[in-house]
Image 1 (cartoon, rainbow, N blue to C red):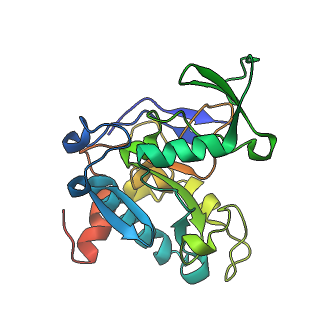
Image 2: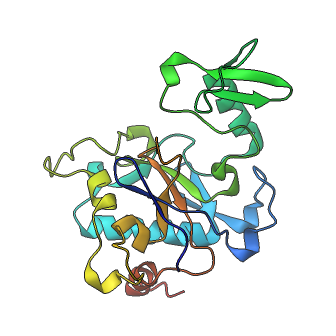
Image 3: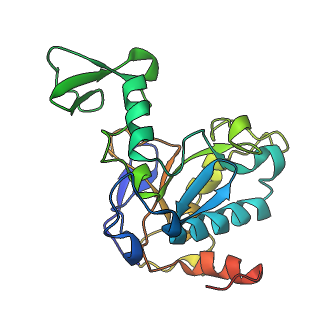
Length: 230
């Protein structure tokens, strides 16, 4: 699948999201339970995104990222309901009289301007009703056995202290999975995942499933190998 690709600061490929056709009309923060499934403790995603996540998890495990070094997510880092997004928003933002128009820290919601609290700089959240978490296609990726042991994905692994999950996700994928002319796809992209902008300040932990119904060949091959052909 070829979509516009922007390389964000730090080498993070950013792409627009194509939503799976079954979920195109789902309301943000209200993805029905029959179009989501669990991906493990405390996490759920839209059905196609969940398959892509499983393939990415297995692909990482095959590279040695297992146990305490496995892919996981932060608490609240997968699907979020509208109410959950609103709770996180109010935890991180405080009302202000007027904005200074820094779009990374100033947000307008319900007729009021809000500013990101200093302790959350670098970890802003979207206005409720606009987050891709609310479409169940986004994961705030971490390292650990589960979300209760989540560590930043850029921290060295316990079993492989010379490696991080983040560096593997950003590494150019093997040649057999390079199917986009003129682009060196990363491991993350060949499983259907990319990062989110702005390009000037992408969040290293924030991955979006962007391929819609065009399920990536590498992810399909992994699922077929474990007996779950798509």
